[in-house]
Length: 71
Length: 528
Image (cartoon, rainbow over all chains, first blue to last red; front, side, top):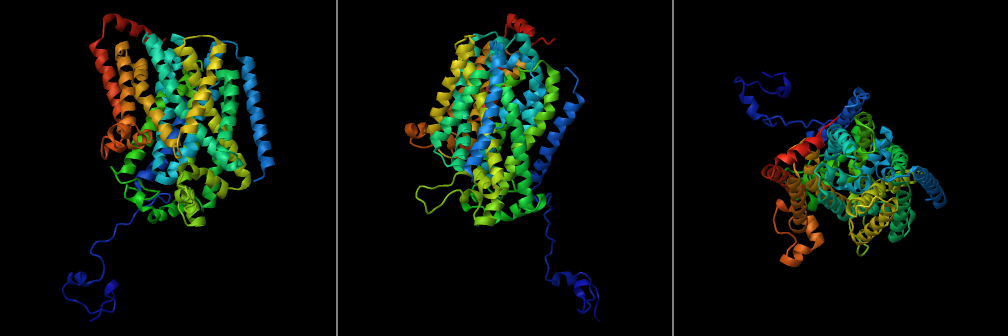
């Protein structure tokens, strides 16, 4: 009896579920995909890239709100 | 490069600068005009003067080149520059300084400290530290400009240094701080335009923001083994935590310069040029955007220059700065940005960038000459004469020129960091307490300033490897470049000296506090 599911396609059905996974030629654990933001993989770098823009915006907002305050 | 076109552009730029210097000269009648521009400057002028004095060729060429080596981790310095150097500096320090400075009628930073703590010694000591240490920073700025002029015009290094310094000294002598404010606003506008165009061109050339960053990420395998073993993981990654490069980036470049900016005498003087806190509030808007466009662009482009150099020459930026076949040629961090501009950008832009760098160097150097000169004439000699204060600029010029000719290559970022570190350790606790802590007294501040300076100098001479090996005293006495091993050999002096000087000030002030001093302090800190 042949299966029609994923990696098993065309292979012989194994009556004990689970054993088949240990026979597969694929990593046991899925490799963690590195997430990139703006093409930068290191969170410490893309975070500071964004922080630079945010802190600059903070200056603009603060100055605008307090434009006429003399304190 | 068409030299006739370039010389014409430089001529126009210098004519406008000298014209503004002359205008300021006509409007400078008193020592107050000369030292603090009359104390009623427009917030735009103040913010541009602060920003353009803060950002020099050292930041663009020196630290931009450092970003070419260490990568985008230097953007932490941009963040510190904006958040600490502008936002906290203006909001927490600037507004109080303006109010207390007016109250005490202070015209210089040393005088502000001296009057706040009722001590002529403090004023003279602070003046002496500025007068002796600032020429090192000024020399770093001049070297940055001279290297670019040398590269672009093909003239001798000494000639470039000399002509540049003389022009700046001339308009500072004539126009004082008014001249500096006017020319800084003009120069700051040129810098803003130049850096904006540089950013657009670079990202456009490399295929857009994300594509450029991805290309830079892909170069991680090209990190030279000598840098990789020190913790370099690529130009879009932080160095290995606790590694040698991590300490250099975090302690020297980010902390040393990022925090050190709060205690820069030539910047603190800018707060005294406006009439009140409202002007500082308005200046925050201009300052925040300006600094983002300066250091943010310089560091991003410095790191991204690696993509360009690898695509064009197969070498990373640092390796492209020298030719191994030429005897005596060696990698020079300070040449990364000039080479990138000259090779990657259109010719007309290298003209504009030439002016941008001249503007950056001139605006910073003018503030430095003014601070050195006023420290000597007004704070040390304690002479109120306009003529003497102008004459002291010549001393500043000569001292800076002499140091510029003595310093080795790849020194710009290091010399800047040394000065920022010394200023932070020596002045920051005293300055902060002058604004916020009534309990600080004369004895505590004197002890703090002396200990901060001593610890900084000791670490520069005997423990922090980069400077101690350069200065050579430790090698001469002990036969080795540094007294300590890793990691202390790469820990910047500010990390130790600043907390120590702060603790000393608190401890000595509490131990020697008297009722009379408390009353004096209360009066001085009282805000209208």
